[in-house]
Length: 74
Image (tube, rainbow, N blue to C red):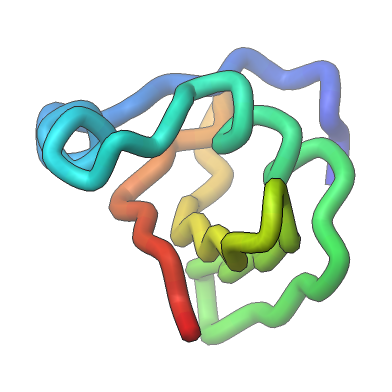
C-alpha cells in the first residue's frame, strides 16, 4: 500500500474521531505504520498500539485513502 497517498476522513470518521477523542495524527500514524494489517474484500483494517490504547482504523483505497471508521479496541 502506498503511504504517500492523500488521506480523506469521511463525515462519519470525523464525527467518531471527535466523539472518541482520537487524535487525527494517531489515525494517520496507524495507517502509515500499522502493527497489524488485515484485508476484507476491498476494506483494509489496520491496528496500532498507541499510549497504551489499541486503535483500529477501517479504510478503502480509491484514488486516495478514504477512512470509513475508527475506534479503540480492548
